[in-house]
Amino acid sequence: FALLTINDSTILAGGNATGYPYTTLFISTDKGSTWNHTDLDSSNVNCLSSNGTIFYAGTYNRGVYKSSNGVNWTRTSLDNRGIYSLAALGSYVFAGTFEFGVYRSTNYGTTWTQTTLNNRNISALTIKDSNIFAGCTTANGISEGVYMSTFNGSTWLQKNQGFNNPIPHINAFLITNNYIFAGSDGVWRRSYIEAIGIQKIN
Image 1 (tube, rainbow, N blue to C red):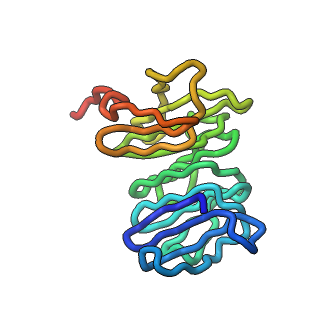
Image 2: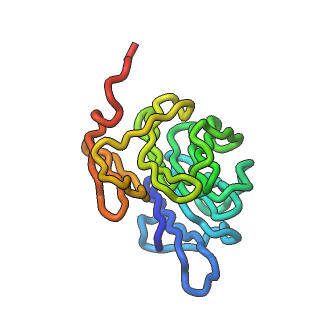
């Protein structure tokens, strides 16, 4: 399996399983002791995310699905894009697409709008506080590194200080222990506070 997301004792795992011609999802509600097949088996699943109460799955060619239990899934209105990455926090959900940039939902995935970071491939997304990080390439595959938004996806700034030239393709993010880690052909690390910069608090 290549995909994982965890919510308390519930684990979702996605990947290419023996006997299935597509990427599918399995669920465990006992911290991985036993597994069952979910009903999301009609599309290749590229990415998973959770906001603590709702699971989200991004598919190769059928957009974003969501589930309240990880077993039964419904297709959202973002149903005509290839989804490469997902990140959720509270009622906000961000979807990174193939060629169409980042989409944002403010109501748990019910409706979606395209952000100003568009016309790009978004291979990785993560959220901490109100800060969203996106790993981007242009439509023709040239890496643009990391973009960050502090306004819920309304405006974006590049955050590529410290990368070598050419800028690496970013495939994954992790924010922990006051650092943001970016995975490419290796792992890059930067101070989270340094990355977000000084922000006005009132």
